[in-house]
Structures are given as structure tokens and as C-alpha cells.
Length: 110
Length: 113
Image 1: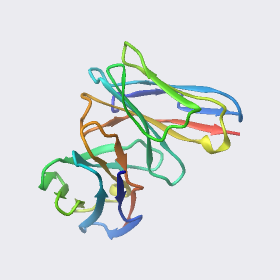
Image 2: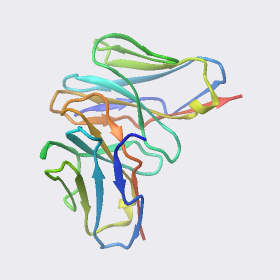
Image 3: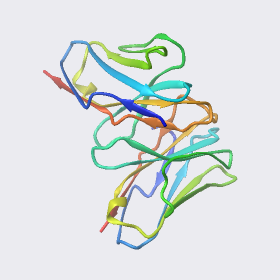
Image 4: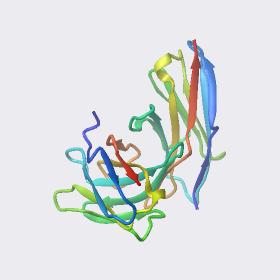
């Protein structure tokens, strides 16, 4: 089967940098995605990694190491509006379902 | 606005009843996904359709069924409802069958009393 592990909560200070880790177990690997969800809202796509390395999109970056079955989401210059839950999601093989981790709740202190 | 439309936004019903949730994907998207999110839980995958055909299936209960119609909209039918079925049900869509980016609707909040 497929499974993902990510921390349940992370706390950081406004203006700082925070990293949210995600490890996965799949029979194959097709890609790792990250989503943001504010309370009461819908998940919104942040980034996608299919190959090893770093993908940068503005203040957010995502990293993947397929050999370590590991990825992380890096958020820079944290703003209060970044307070939300962040989910990693993995697709094992091409025909596999996309499964989500339980999410990491990010708390930002002023 | 993701372009994915879900109705109804809220639904309150009683145990044993049956409900239908509806989803219209973004224009041009051929894949539709259904996820269930319970309080403080992650997103549990239910089922995926691609261009009218079932593509992938999760641990969807036998009381639940779904389909995707020729116009690509999808419906999720939940029957013999139980208290534990109370949750937020999200529909998402993507262009292809294997896309890495999903676009989520605002969800349908189901409350079973």
C-alpha cells in the first residue's frame, strides 16, 4: 500500500523560514504534490515534484529525494496568512490513486 | 475560484437516508476525483473517474457509489447514511488521468443526525 508521514503541527515566527517534511512509502513513484488548506476552505495546489531536486515558486519551494522517499516544503518570509494546514500527496504508479498525508498545521507567531 | 463547482454546499439529513452530491469539473478537465475529509483528518481518497470511466478506487464503502456522465460532471451517491458519514466531501478535477495538480471545489458539508 501507500502511506505518508508528516508532522502534525509546526510553529514558526512571522518573517522566518519553515520546513515541513514528508516521507512516503509506495510501491512505485509517480510524483509528490503539496497543497495548502485554510480553515473552512478547499485545498489549493502549491507545487509538484516528479524528479529529484528543488522546485521554486515565489516564497514557496519544494524538494524531492526519490532515493530517500522524502520531500519537504519550504516557506520563506512567513506571513500571518500562511497559517494553514499543508498536505503532501503522493501517486505511486501511473494508475494509482493520489493519497494525501494527514496534514501539518502551521502556526505563525507575530 | 478553482472553476470546480460542487452542490449542495451544506446538507443535513437523518440516518438511513440517501443523498447525492454533484460536481462540475473545470472546463476542459476530463478527470474527477472524490475525497472525504472528516474533522481534523486528512483527505481520504474515494474514487477517480477519467472521461466517464472509473480510473482508480480507494476504500469507498459499498453504500457509496459514483459515476461520471458524458458531459463530465460527476455525482457521488451516499446511501443508508450513518452518523460517521458526516464529513466534508471534496471533488477535484484535473486535465489528464495522471496529473500532479488537482483543482478542488469548495466541498459539500454533510451532517447526518
